[in-house]
Length: 287
Image (cartoon, rainbow, N blue to C red; front, top):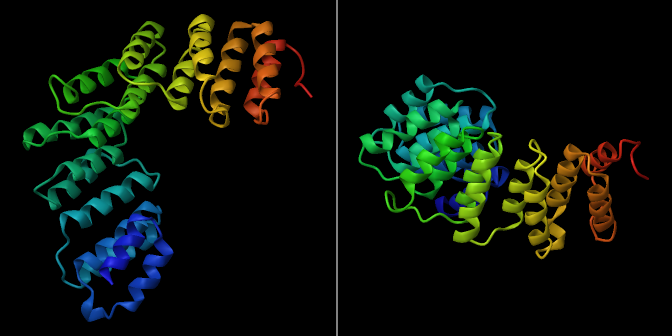
């Protein structure tokens, strides 16, 4: 039963987990049985059901494990509420000793970048090392704070850390600078990313979007031309962001060019792309 529940849990099939749980005789339900259901419910953001099964686990006098508390943190990250350090700290204290998985989940549950960084600092205090999920979690909380993101990135990757960044980590760092409005810093990260890994569609779209506030047409065009050699079906956001750069710059010719490219592709023009095209043309929406 637990093996089946584990499969359903990892696949985020909450209904299947609940159905299978009912097949397990009450006397045979152990902590692992509950943990599998709790994780599936947490992934599904089903806060009410998660609370119900958590209370049932506690009432059964079975001792929650660190994995049980991990599901609680996952649920807190997905329930849409702002959880302060006190609430998150209480879960970590109950789950003690903490491990890297718990810290990562706690960072995701943090309501602010400052709280996320404070939780991240708990790793060093407990002689734990950040992994790539730690880095992704904390960078995700540092959107708009490029300086903080750079500091944490440097701590996690060689030579200081052991996380060898992939395109996902580089793109998360790029996104932090994208939202900070610092075009020079954005260019610097893009140059480092391009020399370290091969950019994908998400990275191209992220960089081009960062060029919108400064109307940095030349920077965006360089990335746009390179991105067009990739998978055409995945270029929806790339076209839209490039159109928005042209709209910000008031470049009608550039906007016409992107519009023509999209019209000649399998992609249907989206609402945001149409709106950006209309702004660039200074006229009504195109037919």
